[in-house]
Image 1 (cartoon, rainbow, N blue to C red):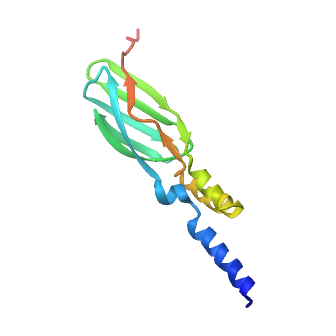
Image 2 (cartoon, one colour):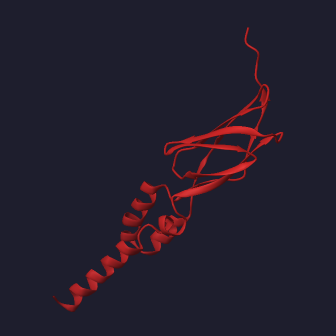
Image 3 (cartoon, rainbow, N blue to C red):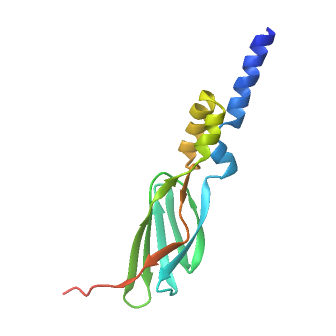
Amino acid sequence: MSYRDLLRCGVLLTLVGLGGCATIVNGTTESVSVDTMPSMPTKCTLTNSQGTWFVQTPGSVTVHKTKTDLKVHCDGAGDATGDLTVKSNFGAAIYANALMGLGGVVIGGSIDAASGANYYYKIPITVPMTEKQASN
């Protein structure tokens, strides 16, 4: 094996080893804080393509990050209910992958996209509560 072949191997291994910056740095989960407006003890369900989580407000829960939005449904005491869709936002970690060149974008970007690590939800999440409509 020539010196040039060893150098190519080293560069390839470095790109593979450093790929997926968001996955390594930010992880695939995120703690989100949830409250209601007006603030009251409320049971909320959060759902995205990776699963379903439950939280008592005001409180926090750890969710899996993904490119899909986070749907939040809250049922409060009495007739109060609330629904909110929290947009999934694309993070800046792809730029770190880009610094490693085409290999970093292809390998690291693929890892981050598959894991959901390069996405995040804006927090805190505040769900507006309204009175349930009476059905006749």
